[in-house]
Amino acid sequence: MTSASIQKILIEFNLNGSSTQCTPLNSGLINDTYLVTEGDGQQYILQKINTQVFKNADILMDNISFSLPYLKAEDYALITFLTTKTGANYYVQNNGLWRMMTYIPNSTTYDTTTDPKTAFEAGRIISKFHQLLQNVNTAVYKDTLPKFHLLSHRKQEFRQALETANVDKLEVAESAILKAQHFIMVLQNLNTDGLPVRVCHNDTKLNNILFSESSEKALCLIDLDTIMKGYFFYDFGDAVRTVVNNAPEDERQHKLIRFDKTLFASFVDGLASNGSLLTSSEKESLPLGTVFMPFIHGLRALTDYLNNNKYYKVTYENQNLDRCLSLFNFAEKALDQKDFMARYIRHAFE
Image 1 (cartoon, rainbow, N blue to C red):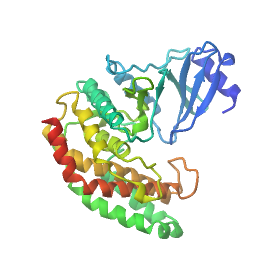
Image 2: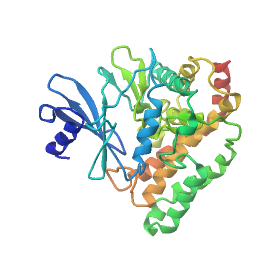
Image 3: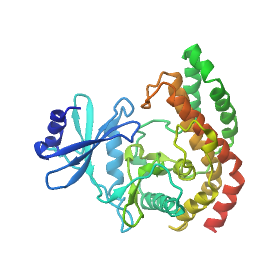
Image 4: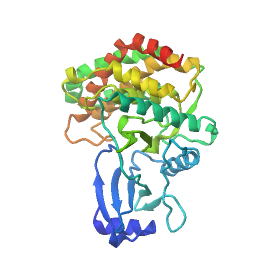
């Protein structure tokens, strides 16, 4: 985007485009994000939603609008969206959907951690998010990404990719394909019968949690694009995969990938600090959910690799394959810790 193009968008959000600075933020894999700074120092976050991924971006913004009135508490920071000249909370330009939200000053995010306090705070803010949303009417929420974490759907996409993929790619990915087929069998045992349907964030990796730079307390969850119905183990497993492992998602040296029991215990302690939120069946689903989430992300990365990298941003040809193998490796390590996780979860919530 040129500076002039962005200035036109800022004007639509009632900002003075000529007196602002706009700095790209490059951490996201899907959307384009910018930090906007006005002449008086006021800052905002400007995002262009990837409408190739989020084909129902208006539904996405509706789900966020349903949630935000509930997501405010003394220990949960409020995020607000700026409205346009027409009163909408997003602006459409040349098939691109733009939105602006308040920036929380003196805040930061972490891709990984080695600090038990950070792990505790991650658990605390995720359970607070669910606590605040536990009484909302789930019927008003629509699926922005239908079947997002549904294993049967991801399995079907994977098998279709196997049928159409380049022969060379199939050969390079042979090990990953075999691992995928193994985990698909293992995860058939994850039974969702009897699990309550909640409003979930659905993308609770650690860098989607905002922390205070001064107090190091977790402030709120960000990147709310995937708020929709789901099961609690989605948010639990997705957080654990980035909280207890400080290797990057595309780590190629698998010996650096680990399951840190101390960080896991701190995360669960934080989760339990907001009181009894989960049903017995939900607690029982969490250990295998911790295997499920890295696997499902890995399967999506493998499928995208076989489909020539249409979904995730990549900086080199085999990055999605590296993501897949790294995620599968963590899923293996999580599976080895399934009994430990079950014991600790019972201990923490008792």
